[in-house]
Length: 170
Length: 427
Image (cartoon, rainbow over all chains, first blue to last red):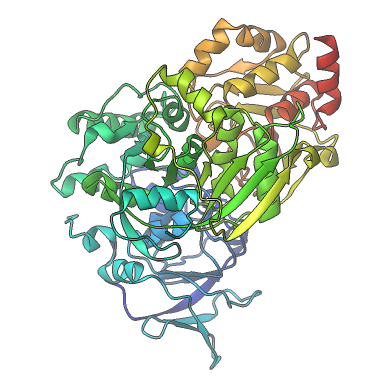
C-alpha cells in the first residue's frame, strides 16, 4: 500500500487523548469501497479534531495517549490514516487490532510509554527508527520508543503485510 | 513441563515449535475463519490481484449480517460484490442472511473447545465462551489467513478471572462484563487474554456476552474454562456428537498469570456504562431518572434468547413508556424462530416493541434504530462510542436486558431490581 518506510520520519503533531476509539476515528457511515468517501470520514466523530476545523492534516504525526484506536476491526479505520497522509502514529499505548491494521498497511504505529501529556498541536516531531527514539520540538531530550517485535519491524520495512508475505497486490 | 494457562495449552497444541508467552510471533494454523459482508468486502479487490484462491473454503464461516438487507444502493453493491466473491471461491453459503456472524458461529457444531478461530471482526472473541481461542483481526490479516491458512500471532499473557458466589436472578452477563471492564479499565487487557473460571454458574448466553465484551477491555480473547455447563450446551447443540477429549483443554493448576481477579457476583449491582466509551461504568441507581428516547435490545452482546425472554417477562401486561421507541433485534434466525414459537414476540409486540430482522442493525449505526442529535439511547449492545449509533451528538448508555426493559417501561433509566421484584411477585 504505502512504500517501504523511511528510517527517519518528521512532521507536525496532531495531538489526541486517551481511549480514542475507531468509531470516532472513522464513523461507520463512511464505510465504503470508495477511497474518496473513506477519506471524507477521517476523525469525523472525534471532538478534538472537530474543534480544529477542517484542516489538511497530510504529513502530520499523531501523538496520542493510552489505548489508541480501541474498538472495531474495520480496516477502513486504519486505511483512512494512509489516505489522509498521516506519516506515523505514536501513542503511550496502542489497541491491538488497530496497531496490526495500520502496520499491515505499512504505517509505523509505535508506542512511547513516556510520551508527556498536554502536548501542542503542530509541535515538531522527529522519529528515528534506527535508534527507536522520538524527539519533540526543539528539545534535545530523546524519548525511547518501545521496541517492536522483529516481525513488525520487517512488516513496516517492507511497506506492509502483503509484500512481507511476498504477494503481489498490483 | 512448565504449567500452562488455557491459551498456552491451545497454542502449544497447534504450533509445532515451543511457545513463549509474551511478544514473540508464531505461525498458527487456523481451524475456522469468520467473515461477513462488510469486512470481507474490503479485501476482495486486493485478494484477486494475488491471483490465488482461498486455502480451504470449507474452513470459511461467512455470514451476511451488516448490510442484510441493505439500506442504501451503495451497501447493496458492497453486499453483491461479497456474494460474488463467496460463490467464486466456493465458500459455503448456508450462513448468509441467517443473523449475526458471531451468534451463528456459536450455534454451529464446528465451533468447539480447543480450536483456533480468527474472524474479520473484533467481536469474534465471543466464541471463547466455548473454550476455544477466538480473536478478531482486520481485513489484511484475514486476507493473509485466507491465502495461507495461518495467522501470525503472539502467545498472549493471561489474566485469570474467577467468578464466584450465588448469582442473583437480576444479574446478567452484561453486568459482569461491565464489572470486569470497570475494574481492569478500557485498555487494561490489551495484548492479553482473559481466562474465565466460572464457579457461579452463569448461563451460556451470559458467558457469550462476557466473552464478547472481553475486547472492550482490549483483550485478544476471552476464554471460559470448559465445564459441565459447556458440556450440556454442546450436547444440546450437537446431539450425541462425541467430544474429542484431546480438545477439552484445561489450564494447569500451577499456571502463571499476568494478573488475577476475583469477581464475587453477590457484590455486583446492575451496572450502566455512561456515554462515550467504556471508561465510566456506574451502578444503575446512580443515573436514576435519566430520560431515554430509544431502547435497543439486540446485537451479538445482547440479542440472545435470555435477553429477549427477560425483556418479555418485564413487559408482559405493561407498555413501553409513551414516546419511547423500543427496538428489538434478535441475534439470529434461530432465536427469532424460538421467539415466534414461545410467545416472546407476542408479548413484546403487545407492549409496543418494534421487532427487526436478525442482523447487526442499530448497533453499528447501520440501520433501523439510529439516533439523532440530543437523543438518548439505552442499548444492550457492546459499544457506546460517540457517533456509533448515529449522530455524534446522541448519547448511548449500555446496560443489561433487564435494565433496558425496566427503562422501556419507565421511560427513564432506573435500578431494575424494584421492577424485577414486582414481576417476580406477579408471576
